Length: 432
Image (cartoon, rainbow, N blue to C red; front, side, top):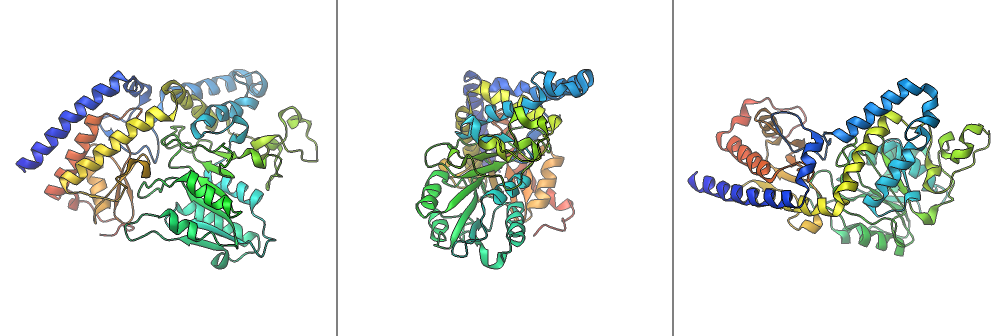
């Protein structure tokens, strides 16, 4: 116990120095921009980013303009509601290395995936019919792939191929590329695994897919706003999509987004809607659908203004921080501290040690993870649980202090030492 206390004290001293460095780099000032749940250490930004004051102001402003302008808000609000999604998309594009005309802010993660599948997947190619995915990907993606194949007359048992992880829970690029057979039409992969936090090499795997004539798309839900990615280059992926309520801090259920590489501009949208026509012709109500230029053509219906406004406001913080790069540097330092403390305290880690191979969260492991998470919450630490045995800790470089990480890990070790988590009921979906 004495040795453990000494180790924690050493980490606390180091954390104080890191917090001082963070203050000097001006990132620490962003903590004041967030309305954090009182009395707790919030380590769940990869599930739901907390409310930022910019997002709050943007929603209040949109509601006030709705009240003052009514229908005229579409043309007279600031910005006009007809242009709000375009402004948010232009702000978001630099975070993923894309051009503004390659990005739209619209819909939700799974809806946008369905739109992209409807646009790209061609069921007529018997010689190229298969889609590659990951067995450990977020289940909604797999649900969407299987249901889309059924809608297009394909049997998911034959046309949907899921790559399995290795024994250490990691996915090897070689294993993924090995599935790129001649009958594969498309691959859909996550940049960051929602469980372990493993970060896949988007550029390298994309090159391998294209070398074999395979379309490739990426689910950026657990990486966007946390890890840099370059999508708009000459050999960038064909498409991508994401939600905006995690690292982007856009609010629960806020508008998602998608990316359409310029090489595909002019493609007919698989699911056409009136918001996907050029802005100047949107209210002409023509019966014939005329797709807008670029990614704008993939819009479907009227966007949610109240669901887009908070994202537009939250993205101001990324602009002021200088983009993702400085946030990523601090994130690596934060996740490294968690992993080092876990190793020192004898807590299992499922996340890669190599910073280049992990996203913004760390997956700790414990056979009774569900109850440990409940004990952490009662003790003032907000983690996230993923079955069967993962405790996810997601510090935000915008507001998490290094000292809070040390305090959270100290609390976790105390819970494990005293077995206080065993006072909580076992969840039906947990494995102990």
